[in-house]
Image (cartoon, helix red, strand yellow):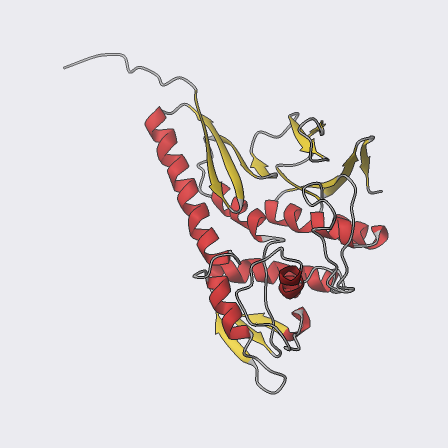
Length: 293
């Protein structure tokens, strides 16, 4: 009978970065696993991110979102169009429509035509002279999306957070991780940790804040000199914001969406949604941090 002592694997770390989701997706993994095992897990995570990007990207002509938009734009007030959509599309849209109702139309995924006119999105569709609807013309049930007026959907205000959530669901519990997609971040080692938040374009415009939950998203306007990245679906006007807004939540999708509502909604209305969804929000500018209470 052979005897021996099994050699323990020491704590190991892996750091990777890939251009995905219109930004860079950074991945940190740590566990008592070999380099090869950590690399395999990281490949699984990136594969899932790429799969979801191919479904939900407005920029990709072959994505499910683009194909669905092509069909929804054929709807009319006299003819409803219905489309079967994937589980992933359905999950993001269901939450988006819930926020549309809670925000009285301020969070509206049918803002795509306005973003196209402002050259924030590519022109894939012929929208001239079309009278377009909004989220009030959409209904969703059992993965069937129906439109009672022509609409064009952009999931850019929520999809990146959703993808990070789905990616982290692929990570085994024994791994310590951090997934960061351009400021949409999730980690299972957040207690008592600090995070760097940006509030202006220059590299030194960063301040640290303690993590308030496992997930974080930050939105600002510091890379768009002369015009705003934020357009109100209600007024169709650009909304200027100084500094940045960060939302801490238990899901990145929630945090991602609420950074936009924190900017677009009146403070009292936003605070009702903030409380309902159990998130914490801070503003940051050159003078420092402030909450929204």
